[in-house]
Structure formats: structure tokens, C-alpha cells
Length: 102
Image (cartoon, rainbow, N blue to C red; front, side, top):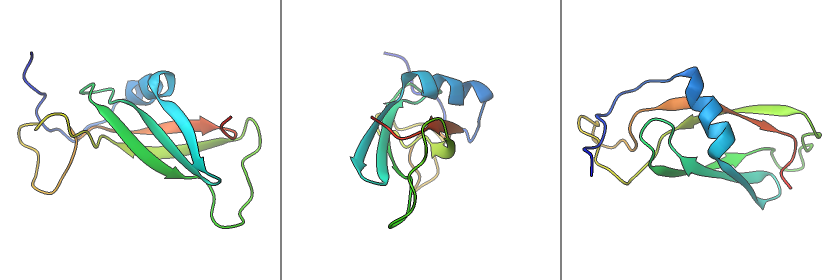
């Protein structure tokens, strides 16, 4: 087993690309999604709730995109140097969602 990565607030364009190919998107209720998958930096699983519309708001059309900011919120490792009260390894990125989930 390898030591966990140190906490570092960082991003990389590849993080969003990796998450787009490995994250699952599930509709929890109309207007709310759950995206989950491995953090592109540390590899630990994360689960993030995403609100896609407000009460009685319009649904996204097929092909319409939505950019969602994501922070690693993993709980699998105690990343050295992580500030008190924070979760994750410090990685953040934007995840692009297209249209409504099926």
C-alpha cells in the first residue's frame, strides 16, 4: 500500500477529462443528480450532489451542457497537510454534463 498524496489545492485540465470518462451520473430526483467516481488526483471514490434546476425550472435539452465545479471530498485517506475541517486531497476541476440523464 502506498502512502496517501499530500493535500494540495490544485487543478489540471486532465482532471475534468478523466472524471468525464469515469464518473457515473444518476438522477436522484427531478432536478438533482449524484455524480460519483474516483478522484482523478488521488483515486479515492467521491460522491457529489448536483442541483440541475430550481423548483419548476426548465430541464436541460438533449445536447445542452452544464459545467459543474467539483472538489475532491474523499474520506479514504488522511492526506498529510490537509487543513482542519477540510475533506479530500485538494484537487478541483469542472465536470461538463450534457443533457438530461437517462
